[in-house]
Amino acid sequence: MTSERKFIVPIGPQHPALKEPGHFEFTVDGEIVTDASVRLGYVHRGIEKGAEERSYIQDLYLFERICGICSHVHATAFALGVERLAGVEAPLRAQAIRSLVAEMERIHSHMLWLGVAAHEGGFDTLFMYSWRDREIVMDLLEAFTGNRVNYSVNLLGGVKCDVNESLRDQILRGMDQLEKRIQHYLNVVTTDRTFLARTEGVGRMTREQADLFGAVGPTARASGVPRDVRVDAPYAYYSTVPVRLITDERGDLLARFVVRINELFEAIRVIREILDHLPEGELTARMPRRIPAGETISRVEAPRGELFYFVKSNGGEKPERVKVRTPSLCNWGSVMQVAVGHKLADMPMILAGIDPCFSCNDRMVQLKRKDSQQWMSWEDLRQYGIEYYKKVL
Amino acid sequence: MRKRLGTMVSDVLRSVFKKPATQLYPFERKPAPVAFRGKLIWEPEKCAGCMLCVKDCPANAIELIVLDKVNKRFVMRYHADRCIYCAQCVVSCRFKCLDLSDEEWELASTGKEPFTVYYGKEEDIAFLLEKMARDNAGENASCEE
Image 1: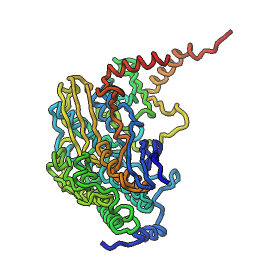
Image 2: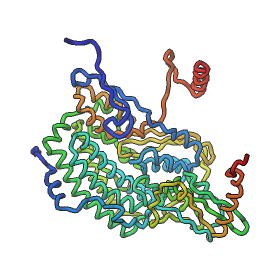
Image 3: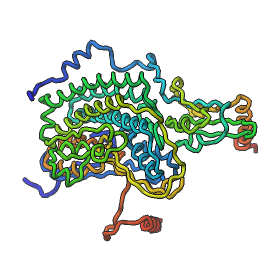
Image 4: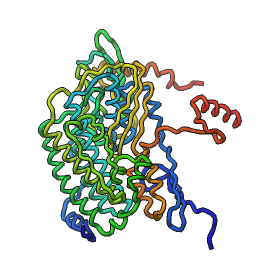
C-alpha cells in the first residue's frame, strides 16, 4: 500500500552528527533521501555587531573567536584588511610567520576532520589514532604561540611570536614524524575495504555542480575545481613560497579524503620551505590607532575554503562595519543537493564530508514578510517588534 | 590499488606494548613551554600608568587603580577569569612591566575570589582594600530594627 504523505526525518538541532547545533530535515522514501533542507542560526553571537563597539585591536581577538579551529586565519584576514586600509605592510618575517602558523593550523584542522569523518563512518580506530597524532602539531603550536587554541599570533601590523633555532628544529622533527603517520592514513583510507564501502562513490558532486552551487575549499577541489586563494591571489608569504594546487576529479567522499590528506603533505612541504628561507628582520610595523576612512576586502584560504572579510572604516578607532563570509556557509548548498538519492545512513558521512563548522555559519539573517518580496530593513524590524508587542500586551 | 581488510590492526597491536599516550595528570606534570601564556604578572616599579593595557585588553580583564599619579602609586586589579591570555597587554606595554607566566597556569578554582588578583606595593593594596571595605560598609551593614 502506498501513501501520498511524505515522511520527514528531522535530525538536530542537538548533536546532528557533529557536536554543534544545526537542524536538518530529510524527506525519505524508504531509506532513500528524496529531499533535504538545512536550518542554521542556533549559535548566532552577534560578533559583527559587537565589533562595531570595540577598537580595531580588540576586534582582532573577537574575530579570532568566530571559530576555535581556524582562529588564526580569521585574525589574519582581518589584520590584512585593516593594514590595507591604513596603508601599512607587515614586515616579511611577520608575513612568513603568519603563513607558517596558518599551515600548522591547516594540519591540525584537517587531522581533526579526518578523525571526525572516520568516526561518522564508524571507523573509530582511525579517529583515535589520527587524533593522537594531531597532538604533535597541537604541542608545536603551544610551544610556538603559548596557546593550544586561539593562538593570538597576529597583531595589527605584524605578529607577536618569533621562531628561534630550537623551536625550528622541534617543528621540523614534528613534521618528519607527522609525514610518516599521514602517509599511513592515506594508505588506510584508500585501501581499507570496509571504509571504502562507505566513501567510494558516495556523495558524488560533479565539477558543474560544484561550480553551480559555489562550493569552496577542499570540497570544490575534490570535484576538480581549481580554486584556492593561496594560488589565485597569494597573500602573506604565499607569493614567495607558492602552494601547489591539489585537486581530484572523482568528486566523491573518497576524493575529499584524498584531497585533504594530500593537502597535509603540501602543508608540511610549505612549513619546511618557510623555515628554510625565513627572512630576517622586524616582527611588527608601526600601526596608527585611527584607521583612515575607506573600505576594503580581504580573502584568505581557511582550512575549509575561502574566507572573506569586508572592513569599512570611518576614520576612527572603531570599525564602522565588518562583514565576514565563512567557507562552511558556501558549501551547504552543494551538500543539500548531493544528499538526494543517497541512503539516510550515509547522511552523517556526507554532512561531515564538507568539514562543516556551525559556529562559522551564523553571521546574519535577512527576513522577508510573508506577503512581500522586499527584505526587511533595520527600521522595518523595529516597527515589527513594536507592533508585535502591542498585540501581545 | 588492492583493497585490504583490517588496515589498522597493526597499529592497535603495537599499542598494546606501548605506554599510554595520555598523562596521569595531576600525578604527572609536563612542564609548560617557555612561550606558554599563563597568569598575568605585573611589575609595579616600571609602570608609568599610561593605561594602554587597560584600553587594549579585549576582555576588560585589567583595571589600573591610581592612588597617587605623581608618586606613581598604582594598584592593578587583574581578573584571571575574564582574561583570554592573548598577550595584547604585554605587547602594548611600552615599559615592559607585564608578562604572562609559564609557571603559574593551574588557575582553576571552585570559588570566585582567587580570580581577582591584586598587584602592587603591599601598603597600597592594604590601603585600597581598606578603602573599599569602608565604602561598602553601608551596603553590608546589618539592619537594626
